[in-house]
Length: 428
Image 1: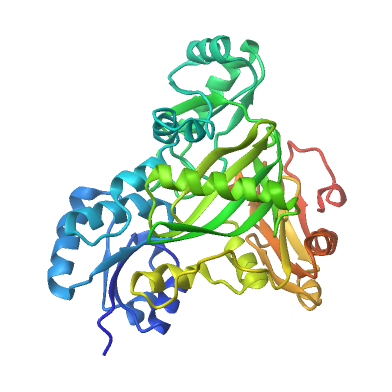
Image 2: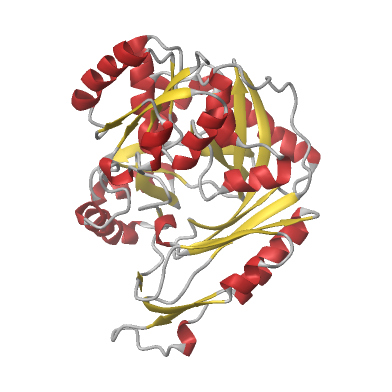
């Protein structure tokens, strides 16, 4: 019987299935709102608790470690990364530390850490930032660092609450939006993400990319550079992704070198990372990073294009079940995703999904709404209502195929009394 024993903090049932298929025995600690009964069949034991509450988590984990003897800990979900680091530190498991996970979670801590580096190259990866507490602080930041600048939560995700400030006249309204966001009780993952601290940081001009990487005992291997299509009222909502990115080789090497330098500076040694950069006029600059695989099903694009399953690699690398890469992988094909949208209102019908799923090159078509559900205004990535995922011979072909699918799949909504549109106008 295998001696590979793992503690899994939160995450998807798919992760557990893959760990079990690798022969890894594991204990799961899961929030009650995310528990899936199948996990009890796959795990040695399941602890139901809010794993972000250390006063609860610590004694449970210590007891489980004594009973089951797990030797490693892993999490693929954003709210589980810092708790996993804290557990590793407590039990001496040798995984990514709480300090590193916290540096990657807290965007202001990341900025300060980069700014304090002795390396000019590391400092050049970042921009000026400050924690802000009111509209006056926004005006002061703009006066010192210029406009535009970005206002965003220090530790949220999914582009939630991100706004571009173009002048002092926007400060009061922007801070009113901050207070409104803090007061909301309907946020997805609201039990995990408390909207508290906000930071202002200089705006970075240029196209945005995400970098999917995996670190093998300190060697960072870029697996793919992913294009981003952004939009929404402020231009920060992610509307699509495609990989591999269409970049000149020297530009891509510059991004690869910048991400490797950044991950070294953060202290990350092992596992997946999802790093967002902008290609500014002076070179690649870091937006943010996470010690996990990317969301938005980028991991499915990576499987389709490269044959690399990060959700499997994360537990497998813990026990040496996969070899360390020494160079970047070569893509087998390209892949892309675009997100579905609809006019705000009540969903009446989802059209064209089954027919589109039968088309060549389609990986999946996911819709997260059904008739009777309400579609709201697109204010963040969590407000999107589905996505199409496709492959193509090259990235241009994959992107074109994804955009054609958007024309075939429609979410038909019935507007509320305040929208004033017709059902026909509400199709997307």
